[in-house]
Image (cartoon, rainbow, N blue to C red; front, side, top):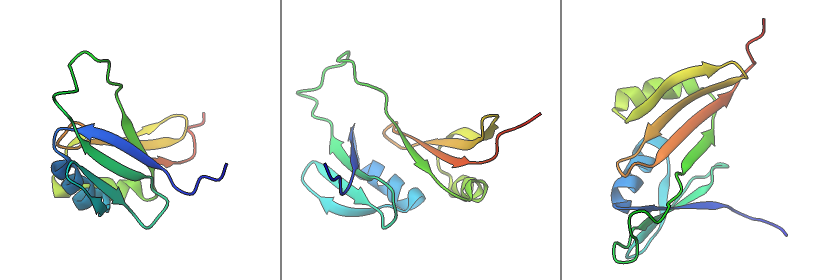
Length: 126
């Protein structure tokens, strides 16, 4: 098998709102727009995103939808955190350092999609 690209499909109530959030705050761009979906991409190694409008006739509460967190490993997270804060992005977990060597923060888009940004750093020793 030779995988040439990857995508995460997210079912949301308002694909346009999520697209705007990912474009404004995380540098994605719309690569494909359909009647009930929007494809997003970047020019770097980030996974593509497909935002699909939830079909309320087919979706029923209690169907056991799994929680999804989209995770991007980045560099310069402290500066990104300050930029996102200044832009008014919905930060749900402020920047923090984990003892195993991870700097992380989490955002939530207008449809409740959780985005976690991480930077791998030296673990705390001692």
